[in-house]
Image 1: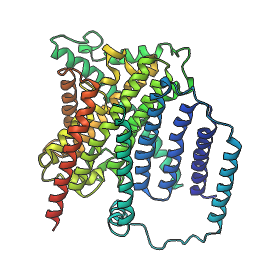
Image 2: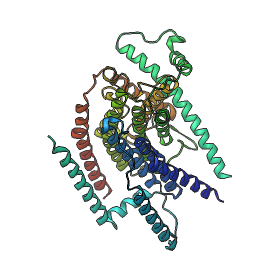
Image 3: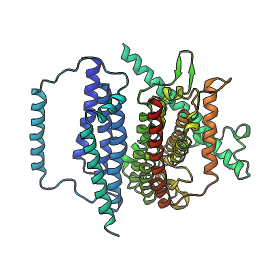
Image 4: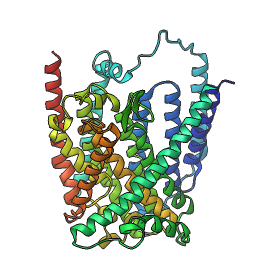
Length: 164
Length: 326
């Protein structure tokens, strides 16, 4: 086994282990906190793939902002404890079945696809290339995403404003 | 055995960063804080331990090391204990991309990442998770309120910091901190970007929870905020995180706006240290001069003034950079 493979399995174990805690923990704050190692494990995988820019964004957005917002939302509700609500309802079995079917489908797709191996070497400085592709080739997707974000932002403001 | 060498280097680097931050930033920083506050209030400050009270914080640290670790009765032990690790760790990670000086064999930096500035923003945003965990895990209403305020404050002030970082990156044409310092060979960016510098400085003070933005640990309202329940070495580790983060922010401001290690005659590392401590003095000067904001004033200030101004600054800078490149 190469060093790369060892690191990959270590990172995968961290990500999956934290993911299991997220799903199974009875305490919602523990679930939210366990998201951090899960996201950082994925960050490690990005670094392993030489995608440093994506790794940085992953830490900034997911570990640094999304987790904070989730924790923030938990603490603002239920008197700040987050311990009142049940973590699971009577539909746990159905949920598990759907998740298993989805996982099976994804695994089949991933195994059957002949992933084309890219040729050539990676540019030493990727952020510039990523920016070019956002504002060039993929501009439609980029602008579409920004409209979705704008609409959700306005929706959030409307909902928050209605009360007063 | 290349990877073994890398792992060894990382370990040695961690030990160096930790001890340097613990001794230079935290112990000396706390002493400086006490001496400067005393000077501003016409007192003498610590005077008895060592020459001119120089060893006061060393004595304090030894005292804290010996103290009992108290965990509140109904605290969440796991979260309570792990929060202590997150805060200093996030602060220490910042130092990887800061260039302290330059030698003949290249710049003095742990790793010149090509996403340096982005990395700094990412790691400094992790501190707030530790603060939220500490506030919630203590099972104390003051700690929880402190944690909540901290989340609101840090999420708000991360945006102007990020925009200021982007403005400088635009000027330098790179996210690497070394390239940014090299870009200031002729002119420091504080001259070209005074607005971005001011925004960064204000938002940095808010990010490290210092007066006038210390709502998170406002003594008169929240005891000590999120770390009210911590004692002994755990308390000391939070202090390490706070002062470490403050020195990291000042070091980043030096790198981005004050030309980093650049300066005439004196050796580069010395120039870096001089600029760093000058900024630290400004932080302390502000702390002991201004009263505290209210939480709504503070959030309004960021959303209604800092963010629009920094967006405008970014657009104007982008325009001039494009024109200059034509």
